[in-house]
Length: 93
Image (cartoon, rainbow, N blue to C red; front, side, top):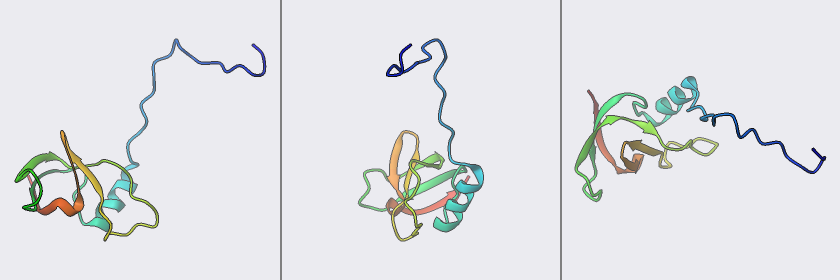
């Protein structure tokens, strides 16, 4: 192989990227006051197309630094994507 060629391991299976580090997810949950990783029931604000949903609240993407809880947090309860601003209230199940 020459110096300008790249070796690609086609025989290996793809690796999945790890999710948020647990302590980082816990810190994001604390800053935004949301139960990330927990089974919840979400009631959405009236402008959102759904009235509510329940399931595991997941972080869809990491917030930008520096963290500002006044900025929306991208969230998901599969298969529904939403932001923290879409939530009217929530409760743990």
